[in-house]
Length: 477
Ligand code: HEM
Image 1 (tube, rainbow, N blue to C red):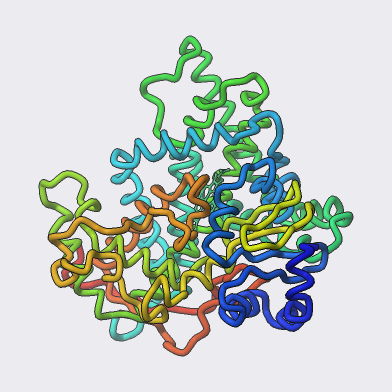
Image 2 (cartoon, rainbow, N blue to C red):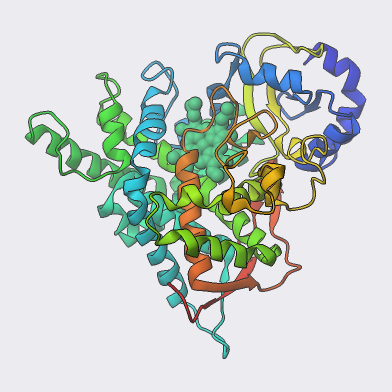
């Protein structure tokens, strides 16, 4: 393990190991006054880079020294949970998803907005029409369940196209698949790695959802390739805007263009979205229920810009953007971010030497509540992202910081060197969903005391049973 770190923090590490991982990471960060420290796990040490100089070193290190892909392979067990997908020489720098998401998906977002809006509307309507209303018109619904159904609809449309987004049996399999994949990955993370090739496939085979999803994606990939072939090897003009199309377009080499690899690549991107987006949406929804003082302000901001002739209305909705950033600050999806496997021994600027084979990460949940970076950190204050001079009139302001901005103090989206390429899509979809909710429904928590989330290793997972009640607004739009 990390020579210097173990010597200094061994006994403390053992103490914190007895607590739940996010709590002990949080306590470790604050008790040790932001000095990097290490925690033992079953198979390795987990080093938490806490000081700004150590975080900077982790952010800026190369894939050769600190590997994101190796850390994700260990954590997600892609080969078994994502249709056989592996990070390998076929696309060593992840150029295909990077181009698909960071360039093509981002570029098409303005054109995709009406399509996302239609799927969001449909998601709310279909989910709520199944549920009976009380005498005052309120329907009670699982907040996380609703978030899953909505994001799954949007994701299926944007990643896989209209045919699969309209297929209800596919949607059921897709939701089950992403659940199976997380369960398999997290269970295997607790077991010796020698058991992964047995346990992970067994879990994935149990419901058959991954097989069904792969077969559906394969069918659409084959159709697309056939269309391209029959239109003289170029991408036909009339084809839909979806990531499946862009993955094909971004796959340049023979190995990248095999049907199996295309299915794996599309499936992996679809999984990245399916797992995290409903979590982010449900936490934003809870933030609105917990801070009703923002609801009318957000409604009037949305009303002001939605139908006006000012181009991209979201560019003007500064409060909504800041609200999402603040909700994410207080509700990260995992206690850790920027997780890397140490492939070559690493000396931290603060002094510890970390041997290869260990894991290093940034304790984002603790950093996002550091009072030096965020004054009064426990307080939900969306205005903290506006320049002080304009906090009273945010509508006149250019934002100081945006939801999608990445920094060492805000590693929700990962490292400054290689942040999440899906973040603009996440921001767009969450905004569409929240504006729809604000303009069309009144909503509140069914039980304000209900527990919202639980810890699973370092992940902070929303509880499915926590409910909100919703009622159509009389003046809905
Ligand atoms: C709230 C939702 C999301 C959060 C919080 C999130 C966060 C992250 C983080 C922390 C990383 C690792 C970056 C690093 O370690 O430096 C990452 C990577 C990645 N994310 Fe996201 N993500 C989200 C949604 C999405 C979506 C919807 C997509 C697909 C459209 C996506 C695609 C990816 C990909 C492909 C990578 C790997 C990038 C690479 O290999 O360099 N993410 N994301």
